[in-house]
Length: 192
Length: 190
Image (tube, rainbow over all chains, first blue to last red; front, side, top):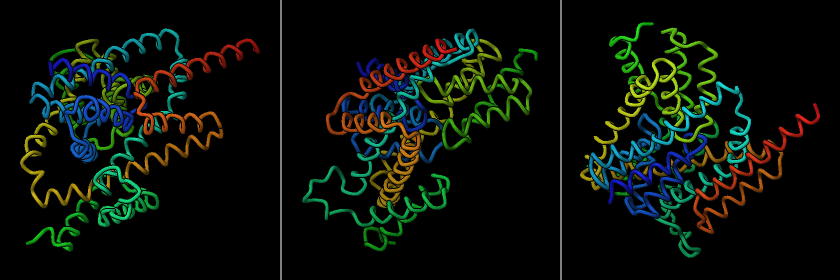
């Protein structure tokens, strides 16, 4: 049953995305693309892109998007509910112990143990998106020269901007979208 | 502070507005919550908000959701946290629902396609920047074990397709084990 599956998938995403922000991304990819086929890889990259441009946590944005693709508005509500249920339970339990003992040593130990793994997993999901943007999928050695030159140029430009001036990611995304349209006119894909 | 209808309404709309207009995730929204609930309304003490932030960042799930649950609970128990959860989740739920309905129709539009094409390269750059920054902070710790865990986890996820949840459980358990051992030897010394 799709509702139950949505709830359970996003329950796991909520439960195991530790460290905030992008930590949910690899879990969403596993659950929504690899295991349940609710999204294609392109749709996954789209929702990460949309989430970057809109307010709200990536996990909640994706829960709504995936839920609607899989089962309409009820699906969105159930996926969102699944996503926040672990938070409700764990946050209140943790708060109880925190006010009782005033320390989080074990929790902080778990977090510091997880940090290197979380970086690696974000890198893995990020690499999938990079390959999709530049080659339309994971390229073999022979396909490496067939890179999408427009995407590669935008990627390098955006990356350089982020490293040098540290602008807000939204500004970078906006610029990348504008460059995409300009490139469309230059290559003749778009016409007035 | 009176817990009347007016209070719950104020709690709801202030949380709703914070969630609707905060771009950039938990690390941005928590300081704004502090500003609203500590400085402007005086509903929470400074120290209380620091505790809430520590717990929200230590718990799994979205930091913004975690923090709002705790703020609601501190102010008005379970009912308060229900109010803040709904107010936090509603804006992204509405915005993404609207986008989703247009998505199917618009995705094949050539202009939208060109915008998304550019933005996907942009988001790849944003993620690459995040990974580089997080990776640098791990290398800066100058602990060879952390660097090895990073490389090992990457190989396990990317090349061996090992389930992420297993990796999280293993690394979390190791972290807890070493934290307890450090704590024990620290107590024995003192």
